[in-house]
Length: 340
Ligand code: SAM
Ligand code: SF4
Ligand code: SF4
Figure 1 (cartoon, rainbow, N blue to C red):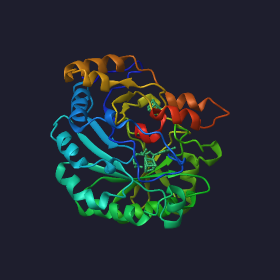
Figure 2: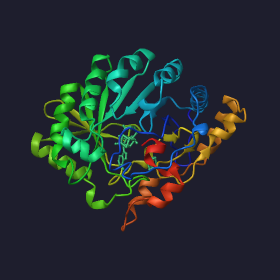
Figure 3: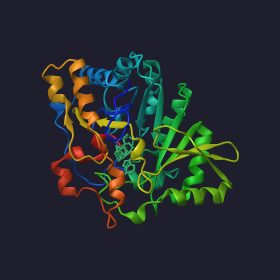
């Protein structure tokens, strides 16, 4: 029986960040030149991460997504994947990556037992990619997507953040690319989370406009009314193609949110917008067993009332969640620390 929070939401889904480091500098996530990094001796090793996952599994989690920063910059990530893949209670073990290192690692990750990959890709134009991410790695990302397919991954997803003035004219092209590489595209509204210090409402392309733009290209779009906690609403095009929209900014889905996040140094955040995390590393390193950790996790979850994105909606003069100065002293607020 999964444990329920105060809004009757289950604890099912864990986003586990394995590093705060990244080999891109996406404008919506890491727009600054300098960052304050997590202390190296506080980063959990694979045994510690696996024990934490064990505790979460005991508390009801059956889906784990490895993320970061860029998870593939963490050395030997396939070893961690192998450790986690051995847990039969995990119905879903996925990875979100920017794809740069995927071409070289896809086969090892598949062999290690990873179930699925999601590759973030916002544009099909190399020069736009360079402007958006400040790294000339577009070809590597495309190769990574191809490699995922060759390695035998199925149910691959492409996540695209839509930014006004940057890529809102590429929605159909991204859907077409998804068809070519056998991946389902999900369009994500630009969010005002920590890290997004350049966020403003006029750069958000809301779900309604994404649908309008796509129906101008494809004609009628049918919503697939699915139950469940997945953040993406899925839609069907006349040719049978399915795509998703994650409308976190204009139409948040907090009411059915079963996810939480653990940072690479073992801080547990009950909401993407939460200011404070719960220190699991301290308990872990003090020798807590998985049963003790699980009991603590359950106790905390039953008191969870977070609805961060919904609360942001009522702020009419909305701006970035956290200013640069605050992020510099509190890297745990950063999107690249808490895993997106
Ligand atoms: N580095 C990996 C990647 O980019 O796929 C994993 C970590 S990244 C923080 C996870 C996801 O968060 C990515 O798909 C990224 O596009 C998304 N993201 C980051 N900042 C965002 C923002 N301000 N609004 C919406 N999505 C954002
Ligand atoms: Fe981009 Fe992901 Fe790196 Fe953030 S963590 S800068 S979204 S690649
Ligand atoms: Fe869940 Fe918080 Fe995101 Fe709402 S804002 S969907 S509660 S993580």
